[in-house]
Length: 240
Ligand code: UDP
Image 1 (cartoon, protein in one colour):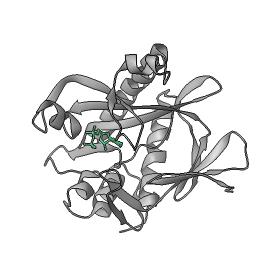
Image 2 (tube, helix red, strand yellow):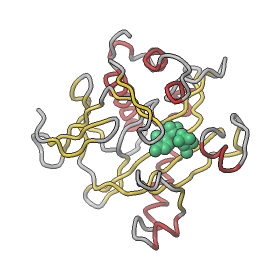
Image 3 (cartoon, helix red, strand yellow):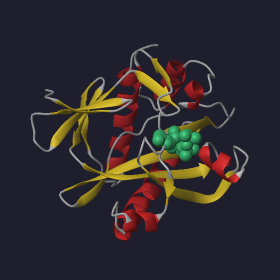
Image 4 (tube, helix red, strand yellow):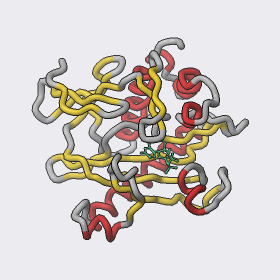
């Protein structure tokens, strides 16, 4: 049961639930890129992302990662713990792609010798600038201990998800995580979907993520279905 709309972002809505400490996170069918400059509505995307995100949060839970996930509430809704969100995004990279290539002049596809963690300040206005732990401490966004904790969780997530995707022939190139606090504890929040990850087919290098939409490489729905099929959860989604 959903209550009042508490927050609306580009890809999701958060509603009050019948419990004070839980929210309903609804995945919208909207696809956006370049800070919302490119926008489309893709029927069924919300259900695909909800199925993929729920499956991944369950997998992480089984591996001991503490997250906000409570359960899949409906085909396009997840029930989550209400979090006080940290204004810092954590990106983990296994292979160079996207902004790091532009920033450092790297070739897309360069394998990194070990996973790299980067921090970004959450601000649409400022286009999420890259920051470090000193900025976090100085401006009161997070303590060093909190950032260490978030990065340690992000590395555990990398182990679990890299192995999970590799098992189905997909390379986890990079992804973005968001965290929040509940009862003084830091939990992994937000969503984990091909909207916020780069996923490449190991055999062919084909992109199976939102870059397909960003760069007009084909149907986003088809590739998200491909990810769901490989993860064995196509029963939780609808045909394109
Ligand atoms: N990412 C995201 N939201 C953001 C920024 C990045 O989900 O606001 C994801 C993005 O999809 C990719 C990873 O984080 O999987 C690294 O993104 P990058 O820094 O390369 O930025 P991009 O070039 O994708 O904007």
